[in-house]
Each structure stands twice: as C-alpha cells, then as structure tokens.
Image 1 (cartoon, helix red, strand yellow):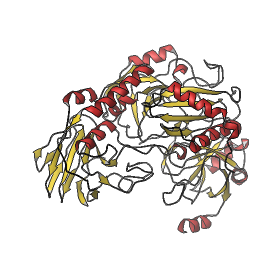
Image 2 (cartoon, helix red, strand yellow):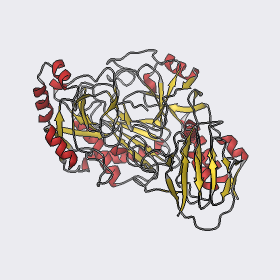
Image 3 (tube, rainbow over the protein chains, first blue to last red):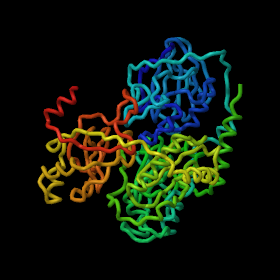
Length: 327
Length: 246
C-alpha cells in the first residue's frame, strides 16, 4: 500500500469519514467530518465513495510526503496549499508524483480543510467508521490527532482515474453561512417571547473554547424571563423554567442549548449524547457543514425557518451534490 | 475542551407525571424526534424507554439512524430525506402500542470494586460532613444499594445510576473539576456514576474503580448496559493495585 508520511501534523489533523451512527445507547456520538459536505465533495473529486476516510485539518495545515505518489483533492477552506512549492487549487483533483510533498499553511478562509486521497486513508475501523473520536481516544489513527513522523496507509483504488471538477455555482451555494438557519428546539416554548426575540436579533461570537464537541458562543445572554425552580409552564407540569432544572435527555446534532449564564452552545459532531440544558433552537441539517467552518471570533446570527423549509433546503443540497461533479 | 454534564440535581420522584402510558412527541431537530414517557424519573417510565429501545433494536425502522435513551425519553435520529416527522411519528406510535409485549432481558448484576476515600475519593470526607455521617457510613450506604443503569450518555460508557439513598443526596460541586481521573466514582443529586474517561466533571468523588468502563477489546465495549443492576464493592488500596496490574 502507498503511504503518507506526516512531516508536520498541523494544529489538529485527524482521520475522519462520515461518522458512526447507531451507538447512542452506549453513549458514543457519531464524530465524523465537521464539514461533511467538503469531505463528500473531496471524495467525489478523487473518485472515492463519499464515505471514504480523509484528513481533516484545523486552522493550520500539515506537510505530507507521498513516497509512492497519489491522486489528491483539497476541499473546504483555503489553507494555501503547495505541491513542492507550486500552488495547488482547492476543489479539484491533482496528481502527486512519487517523492513529492504537499504543504499547507494557516487558513485564509474558514476553520477546516480536507485532504482526500484516491482510495481513502486506510485505518482500522472502530464501530464501522474510521472517524477519530478525540475525547475517548477511539477510531482514526490510534485514536488521536496526527503527529510528526506518523505514517498512514492509502487504500488501493480500482479502475482508471479520470479528473473531475465541481461546478462553480454549486460551490457558491454550498459556501459556509454565517447566518445559521434553525428550527425550534424541543424546549423553545420554555423561553419567553422576549428571550426568543433577543436570541434571533443578536449577533453571537464564536469563542476559543469551541471544538468538535461544541461551539461555545458569546453575546447577549438569554437570562430573560423565568428563573430556576419548579413552577407551572405551558405543559402544565412542574418541569421548571427554561433556565431551570430539566431532566437529561438525548441531544441532537446542532442543538443550540442555553447553558448556565444564558449563553448558547451549539452541540457538534463529537457531542455529548445526552444533556440537561434547555434547547432553544436547532441548526438545520442543510447548514450543519457551515458550523465546521466557523473559527473563533467569527460572528453568527440565527434565522428561524419552518420544518418544510428546512426539509426543502436539505433536498436542494443533496440534489446539488448529486449533480454538480462531473468528469 | 469542555463538557457539560446533565444540568442539575434531581429528586427522582418529585416532579409530576403525565398519565403513565401517554407518550408525548416533540421535534428536536429536522432529523430527530423526542418521545417522552412523562416527566418524572421513575423505574416505571425508564422501563417504557427501555422497552421502546428494545423493540426498535429488534425490529429496526428503515431510515432510523440512531437512538439516544435517557431517564424518561428516547431521542430518535432519522434520515430526513426518507421520513417527514409526522410519518415517522405515526410509525413509532405503532411501536408504542406493542410495548407491553416486549420482554426485557433479565437484568445482569454487575459488581464494581471501588477503593473509597483518600486521593481516590477526594470528596468523601466533605460528603460525610455535609450529611452528618462518618466516611465509613457513607461508604457502607453507597455500597449497600443496588442501582439501576437508567441509561448511558454524556461520553462513551458513562452509566447514569440511580437512585442514591436519600441520606447521601448531595448537590454537585459549585465549581466542576477540569479533570476527573478515569474510573472515579461520583455522586450528584441522587445519581451516582463512574467516569469512563478523563473529562471535566462536577460530581463529588467518593472513590475509584480499577475496572475499565469502556474497552474496545471486549464484546459490548461498555462494561455496563442500559437496564443492568450495579453494586459497588469496597476494596483496599492493595486490592486496587492488584486488580490494576491484573
């Protein structure tokens, strides 16, 4: 098998695919690419199945030597990639000759860049997925971020390779959003009108404490209205107010929970599987990949959409992905 | 990195309950549904959660991608391209009608050895002081109870065990620890549990187990499964060391 020699790992580079679903009863969250759309396009560009494993780089890319050569694609944010010092473009496939080195630097756009390799990265799967789950140290390459000196194997690909490109209009439509579209969270009714109004009218800033588990935001606190303690609410029981006690329950990807102090936290790919904070909203499926490109200090707002609209955005996105990559 | 544990302390039987068999559906996101069996943490409501989980595991619904059981609810994640909420809800209501016919597996009794106190249980003395007991009494009480695994959540292999004897019910720490060592046994409200990984955490630590709660080299991965019964068995430091090296 061909190899990738990690000469510099970058800030946080992990092996990711589309994650492992189905292990919620064990407390295992899916993990997987933070910008799944970028990974899927990158895989398509090198002729892989969308589920193949690639490298997810965060804010600062690495340097990789390919002793036997490879066919690569870069997708996501622009990390100023060079192949033996000549610039290479994002969103296209290119061939690397034996002994060439791919170098990436600090991001010029969003948080993450994906390196996809024809054949896919070969790692031992854990619960059916190659994705790294950092907190538990499972999956990926030895359950951790890459280090200098690591050697990764590339799976052999079958058939001849034909260069592919992705339509420019599709990239425009799929580009990460700073206005995140959301549907109501399961406890949105616990928040009084004024609190909801504040939430939707405010601009929030992504903090440094954000990662693959969740994005912690700062901005106007949602402390308005009711306080902790048992009293009646819309459901006629005594669950307490939005910011008070609630019984832990399963939490969904992209849930916007209002933590103690009233600041929002968006649960992300390596999220805790259950939690006990009220959720005011949930980022729609079609916008989840945008979360993966948010950097600390980026500013976001929330835009309320109804269920039908969120569904049509998802259908649009999937149609676009299916139709925009051609030889 | 940070982590947020389930909100606050509970009293298991304090909250009011909706009529026992009436499940309530709530859309959690455009690809998930929450099914609530009342709003009270009781063994009965949790049993309903486990029955539905079991039925969905035995007879999977096409397009359902993940299940997250909790005290009295189940989160169902699905492929939004295959299922609009209302259609999946209809499908799940058929499952709900059949819960009584589901037989749950005979609960396993899992014994977890714990070395209490000292640097393994840095909060033991304070818990004893807060509850007007000696540390020895706290240990005896904690180890004399048979707990139910209500569900696993938070991180891989973290079992929410209940309920703690009333005399031990203690609020969590005002300031969570940044790092709780692997295997730490803690209490919060009337819950108890074991940290499977080194994570931040606000539960009060009574001791530590040498057992790995989550291991990839064994079948089932997690030492505990939902519905299991758990008993903690006090061990000495010597025994702890022996079990670690074994």
